Length: 587
Image (cartoon, rainbow, N blue to C red):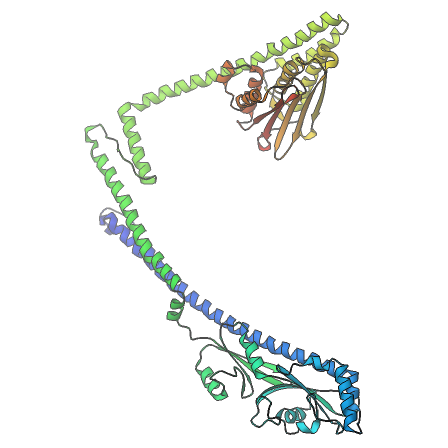
């Protein structure tokens, strides 16, 4: 294992030299190797893209011819299946006028004339019927004897054929010498009259429509040794095309069968070298240069300066500590480990110069005293609740005795016993909401003796909330406040509602009364005090009972509980307590 010592090679090197070595071997070389692989990946990706472009272009051209011939097949089938046309062509005519009249009727009453646009393609039916007269759409079958397509079609013995060639001596002199013709034998009707339908497409139409197909490469379409596309290209000679393609390294060739003939589609992309890839990706090349050279050099210099300067300052500070009194570093830059070391150095100076050890012990003792004081104050707050509730309960009994005599005293004492039993058991401050519900019910029953028909109440606690633990005598504090400050000041009948339920990942506790309520400003002030209550604020504030309950709830639920007040003067008031579900503990 490598053992480092101050006399080793690295031990003698200055920090700047170490950074330089780390930069060369830890940054430059890995990045150069990475760039080589990255450029190679880009090159291979370009090759794949070019292959994809060629395949996609061939697919598009193949689909074009397939759609063109499917259209021709549909048109030819419609003609073949048309009984009117077949009857017209099978009939023998005695006089030319008979033929002409039948021709006019047939063309006018059929869809035949709508199938062709003479400027784009030409439909001709060759019929072995000597009584017919040659015209735009119909010719004697003998007229096709000298046609190249007819000779190849008859020799093949097929019923369908597609032919593309250059006709040096066309039979019809006006016909385009660049021929692309679809041929189909009409076999729908069993008659001795032989009929062949041909659909011939103009070469310029095919050239224009193929040129409109978006491709990223150069395309050629051949039928045998005839160059179908591009008809206007300088490579319209098949031999020259073969010589060009032979010298191109990136060519895709596909043989496409078309009704007894085979068309060859060539897709050619440019020669691709690493230099060409870099030229085609100049932004990426520049980005690699900046990322792998310029930025790392600048960052390394900044890092070196940031580290060496502060280490020098720290070393100088330690060097000045020979006189037992260390001087703190006045200016500390940064927030990294070195700056933390400098801060720690200053703390050591402070500890050494101010005898912090003794001060620390004094502070610890003060903290223990403060904690004990706060605990004592909390116990005192808890003990204050006992006489508070006992006074209100005894006051209810007193008022009842004055108004109605002693007949129901036993029942009132029973209610008081329930309250007193809960009130005196302070060895456990937490109770379930179900236990608190019993106390609330007892308290409100006692209040009903006092207020008579002026008070009604309803307690609605969800079953899944009854086992939740809360500080003892907290909910009843809000209920008591609703009675004393809400119902007592109102001469008409009032209601008190207590609800506990789950809502959106929190437990909601509502205490609502239909008493006199508070104005908006007073309610907002009380809500702020409830949410920000401390032991010190309780000593100086009114509403001690409510603030006491709020403080104990906040302490039990680690300050996560929140309080809200909704109040309207003369209508009533609602106190809402919201506790996150993840802070809840159940018995």
